[in-house]
Image 1 (spheres, rainbow, N blue to C red):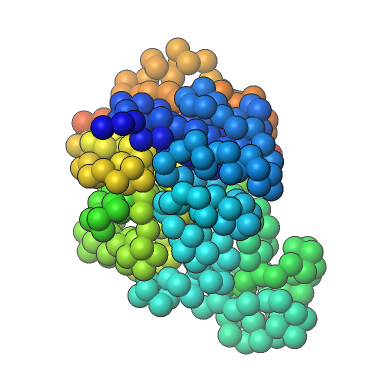
Image 2 (cartoon, rainbow, N blue to C red):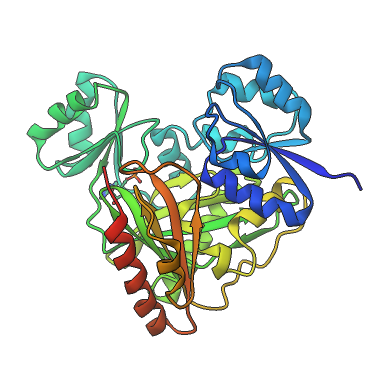
Length: 370
Ligand code: AMP
């Protein structure tokens, strides 16, 4: 059989880890990313051209058998140009239903996944309606292009909503109820071309200044809640007809789950699966995209990940921690930029907690947030 060549839109660290997972599967990767410094350039061929360069996109599509993405904000016209030439997996529906926060919440609600009250804010008149439907304690977010907590404002009283909307440049926004959560969790899952799917153990996430700092698997939640999270992940996979890996981020409040958002791609809260699960989220994504059977998403031991943000500790200090592995993305450090991560595995939860404390301490000494 001839080698499958997968085109990947985006060449950041997610692309790099997809490319690394592709190598033992005999899959070649071609990355499309405007930056000549794209981290994924070290693990495949790289086309450095603008997102709106339709000629370069056509050339890219002609080089590959199938296209996927690690970056979901690819302009619609660019995606359409690629989709006209080669299959795109996951399909455009996965992007359409998740690129706009209102459509995403409506999709989740219709798929049977619980969400908090929300309302669209597009005009001045919408402000009063939004307050009446959602309440006076909420979060105002731009409908598109927000990430890592950017493009959002917490509202703590009726008088704060209009100034918050001004601060977001009066962009089309969503106003959603503030969820007084006990924990933030996520579920990463992969669906194959034939519709079979695997779901990874539920993960607990800790954010610092809106950026993911730590993920721990499995999250310390009751079994019933873990099963509900798994069910919600499958509802999302099926509802989207998704092919590939995605992440569903949720809050746990009062012992129940409330969905926050979907990432229609491999996700930072699934990096622990590289050492922690029998098949990583990256490998399963590549298998799905190439039409191959999926691998076991089970995790033999407790595992965790700590993000390295804005600075890297000396590699030797990371590797001196028992059960630790390091992954550096080859990006030049800038405050607030994810430049690597540490994965930790341990035979018991108690040992994981100890090792994690050492890894977090080391990361904090070198991390620089914006
Ligand atoms: P997001 O960009 O939607 O992932 O939000 C970034 C972070 O802001 C989340 O991980 C939460 O910590 C917090 N957050 C977002 N939406 C809400 C909400 N409705 N209620 C409480 N906290 C929120």
